[in-house]
Image 1: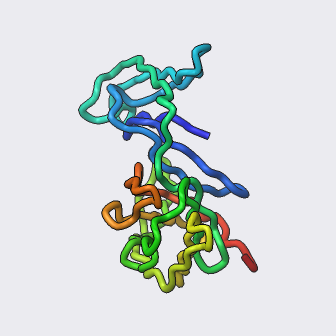
Image 2: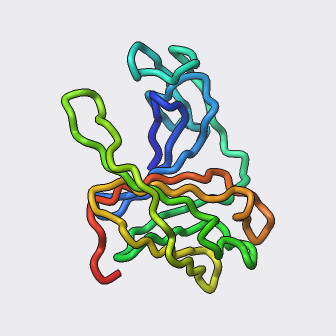
Length: 191
């Protein structure tokens, strides 16, 4: 699933599980905050941009826009999915990792926080803390990495930031996007 982002611009891509899931950046650098998406008969994605006062607009961008994205038949190396586990998260990539890559804890910066619901649009970020990666396990096919995260909490956002300089694919591609935000409503049991 993809959706537009009026406030931060661009398009976001979502991978969802059981009433929780993760969001990734899909594209950025558009002329306005994205309010509408429509697939055209030519297979292109048409984007309607909008901007207004408050947080209804991408700061520094136009208050309007219409753009077209067309698939160029090339794929990117990025996180395909993030899955919650009982004691951490599993990251799946679109391509296998290069041998020896992504195996150390310093390749991953993990944080967690929660938002207090308020009458205002949004709410403050609370209890922002770093989560230390205890262990890293790369799957045999090198497409998945499990991060053991002691201290992970339910009803928190788990923020994942990957080291772009050190994590590359087995074909030598750099990461397209390095960030993910997982909405951890519940921590799975026995997974």
